[in-house]
Length: 249
Ligand code: NAP
Image (cartoon, rainbow, N blue to C red; front, side):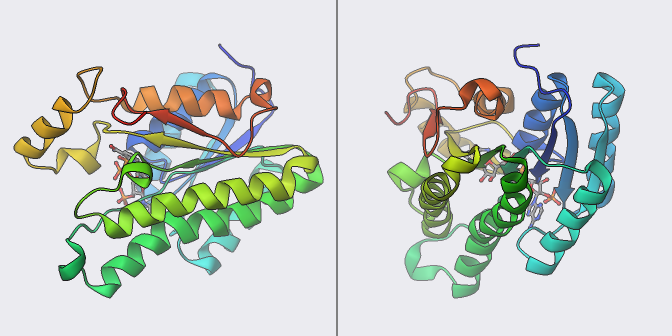
């Protein structure tokens, strides 16, 4: 166990699968109790059952569209009731709706900003209410390499992920004295359902641009997130860890 998170509770948005689930596993492996908020409650509950079975921690799945203010308030109320505290928030839920600028529909811009960025604001706001009282908290938001490099076809997605960096730095400035740190992790190309959908030629092009020569795994991202969630990272705030095999440096 690299870090001791026993007695702590973590909420991972979009944690039923992919990178979110890998993060939940790392945290549970260090003893943290886990809440997962996802669109499909049955998927969130199935993932939580795996975590309790493997690590003996308390884990609970919630139905939560984290871009909806009412749903976010409700899920945080449930977490307060079920766990009595919140030490770690992972803003991970994310979607893509790709298209070149000239062809992108305004609704595809709005929904990506709403799910990827507004959700991080809504969840951070609720988490900070609990964390300020505890005088302790760790907020980690999952941004992306495209926030820093741009990416043709992803004006909505790259804007949402760049927005998360501003959000992170502002929370870090506002709540540092309350013992709350806010950081971001910016993954490069990570093998998950989100990237499996890309055409083979695009994947080949991407692979060629990575100095380490291969795509990352959800666990590569989760290891960096785990460090930022530990007590040991307490003097790091408002920062970004890039996990991209050297694709952007
Ligand atoms: P993924 O496999 O598509 O998983 C995303 C999860 O978020 C799914 O469980 C999804 O639920 C959930 N979700 C979507 N919209 C939601 C909402 N409104 N409320 C609650 N949950 C919602 O994606 P991933 O590849 O693991 O990506 C995780 C995060 O890392 C995202 O923010 C993504 O932008 C970021 N990221 C990924 C990569 C990569 O290469 N994969 C690179 C950089 C950054 P459903 O199953 O119901 O759809």
